[in-house]
Length: 325
Image (tube, rainbow, N blue to C red; front, side, top):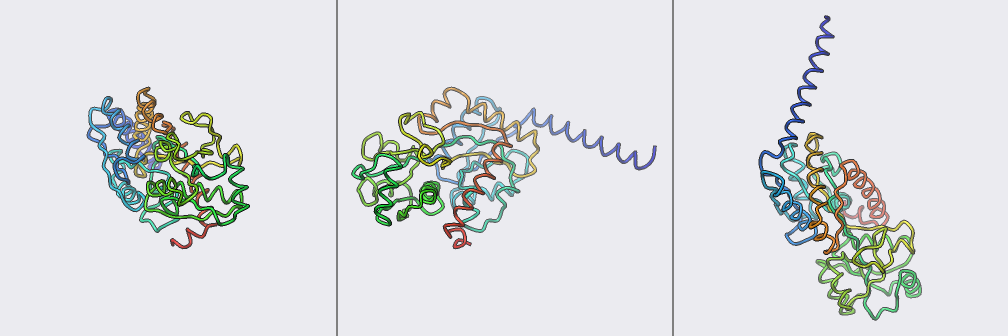
């Protein structure tokens, strides 16, 4: 046998050996605690979904999944930490769709695509388009007509430029060519308080944030940002019923460091998706305005790419991205 043939055979043997070793490791995974880093404070949507998964996996795994909150910089502090962690499946990050927005707002020490291996899109929640009850509109078409009749006179609130509710409204404005003035707040709750007080007229808000006020009658919901109607508000039309193609949800997903073995990624996805499919978990998240998903890594990767293109285009058009850089 020639030296070339011997070398090729040795390379093939090593490849098979390593593949078998990784597969065996995936079967026994996890052999120690897994850390799921969350870039936001305890109690928010990202943290809630992370802890629901962690609690359920405690029944399946011999070692705990530990949630580690590292808030700051729209989640990028936690994301950078995980990008620089060993690619062994034991350090993960739970991100929101801010992961696809932040790269256009500030310079990052990591690449949001190349430095990560998507595991699963765990859950999502749409935004409700809510107005002060005195505003004389009952649907999207009436809102657009009023805004066109009173250009620049209506105001909407958000927790800041680049956030999901802000982008939802800017997408609506872009698609309808209307002028509504943005009023930024230091958080969603202050914006909601001012909306209920009549200081602003409308906003997009996540269901867990504005849903209770809609139920109490303090705010009126006129549409929802999901592509389909939502179980908690089955009679509420989607924005896309008036504006085809409109979609602006907030989602939460798990990423591993790049180069994490596919067998480990698939094991993580399978176990997390299984946890999300449990009836008690599904009931818990649905009751709080979320939808449990648990899709495949390649499907999650496509969503990340799609949203980066979508929001990047909008932010550049607004001039926000250029100003931030």
